[in-house]
Image 1 (tube, rainbow, N blue to C red):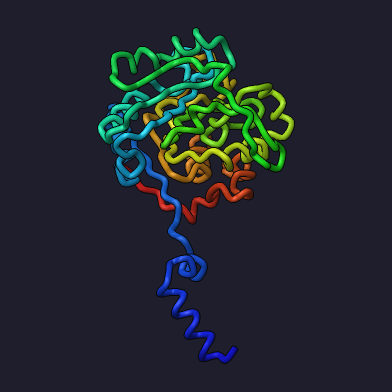
Image 2: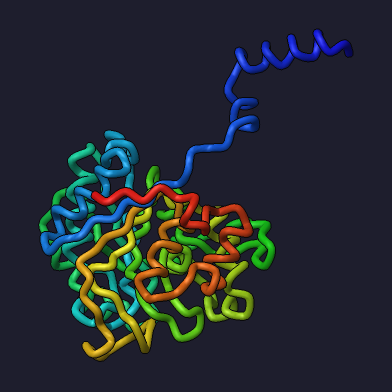
Length: 293
């Protein structure tokens, strides 16, 4: 092919579509929004607005899953579970955007009834039309092909798989096995079966599930963080009140930013580092646009 013909072909391709443009120019940087304040409803709205507003994610008629951490039989002040006021504010935003239904659930490690009740989330969402908080039902898990590095298939909760929008709302906290538990690990709450098995190769196992189930919006609850004896906690001495929320569409970038709240570097958290290596997001905060909401 002559040079003139080659250049002509490239020019036609650029005009025909933007796929080649993406290869020629670097993509837009990941964005992490951070809001701070004691009015949790307001900072929730602010951090979502900083990413373009809830209507960027939720459309009229959507079924939305908002997945908190309700994994432990702990009151909200112990920072082992997602703050109920943050959950209520997110549900309100989804309804304002026209969501048909907002579903809230988690697969707890402790007794489900007590974990749900003591989290304060069911009480915070009580009485909200079209918001459903219920314990997960065994028959709703479905063996799902993942074709991952570690997990070729796993039982995942069908209501998470079928939702139009999946919003992940973990709490930022210490974890005795993985260092920290943040957004990448929050996906465990839709897994059934023997979840203890994945701890052998948890970094790649979680990357396998996150590769199959996209979190459209991540909001990390750092209103108070658990600095030690996680993931269960139990002592207020281990709790640090920050009154912050961190949001992004990039779970790795969100986790990387949240890692700094604990005085750690993102690369020190193997789950975050592996997710980055697997192409799930940006770990280098110098390449991330941080917006203060």
